[in-house]
Amino acid sequence: MPTDPTTHLLSAFESPDYQPPLLPSVATELLELSGWAEVDFEKVIALLEKDPLLAGRVLQIAQSPLYPSKSKILSLKHAVVRMGLRSLVDVFFEATLKLKIFKAPGYEWPMAELQRHSTATAYVTRLVCRYAKVDGEHAFLCGLLHDVGIAASLITLAEKRKGPDLPDLGRVWPAIFAAHEKASEILAARWKLPVEIQRVLGHHHDPSVDGQVDPVAAAVCVAECVSSHLGAGIGNETEASTPVVAQSAIGLGDAELRLLIVEARDLIAQIG
Ligand SMILES: [Fe+2]
Ligand SMILES: [Fe+2]
Image 1 (cartoon, protein in one colour):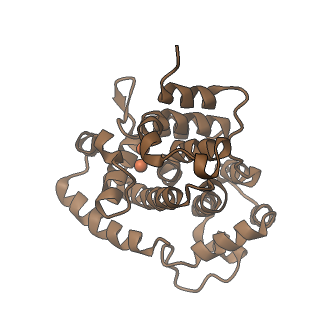
Image 2 (cartoon, rainbow, N blue to C red):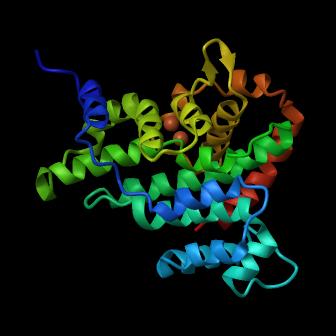
C-alpha cells in the first residue's frame, strides 16, 4: 500500500541513509563553548575565522541596528567583547542558516520567505522571553530553527527532482506542513543540538509536552504569530498554532503584548 506524502517525508528524515544539510562544526563548537563559565576569546575568534565568508556575515549582522552599540564594532574581537558569546552564537547561527541552509535550487522564493520568517521569529522570541520573564537561554536559536524542517523538506525535494520536474509548492505544501514540526526536531537531533532545543522545535505550534507547557515553545508559538501578523509569516502556518493558550501559559498580558508588537515591528523592519 503506498504511504501518504507526510509519512513518506518523515520516513526519509528518519532513515539512517538521510544526509541532513551540513551544519558547520564551528556552530556546534561555539554553542558548546557558550555554556562554559570561562571562555578564551582568542579561541572563539580562531574558530570564527575558519570560515571567512561566515565571519564576514557575522560582523555585518553585529554592526547592524539589530545590535545597537555606543561605538562602531570594527572587528570580530570587538564584536565578541561587546556582544558577549551568547549573542555572538546567535548571530553565527543566523548567518549560517542564511548562507548555507536556506538554499534549494528552484525553491529560491519560498526559501527567502522562510529565512525572513525564521529570522524575524528568532528576534521576536527573544523579545517574548524578555517581556514574559521566561528563562530562555536558547530562545533565539529555537525561534531561528523552529521551521528548519520546512527547509529540509524543500532541500530533499530539490535534490531528487530538478528543473521542470520540481514538484509545485502548492501541491506538496500540505505534506511538508504536516511533517515540519517533527522534521525540525529530527534535524536538531541529527545536528546534535541540545535536547531542550529539539523539544521546542517539535512542539512549537502546540507547546504542551506530556501535559505540561514548555515555556520556550510557548514563546516561539507567540513569536511566530506576531511575526506573521507583522508581515513576516510563511503560508498558512499560524492556523495550526494556539497563541492565546501559549500567551496565557507564560503569563503575557494583552497590554504587554501590544507594547511587544510595537517593538517587534521596529526589529522586523531592520531584518534584511
Ligand atoms: Fe513558523
Ligand atoms: Fe512551524
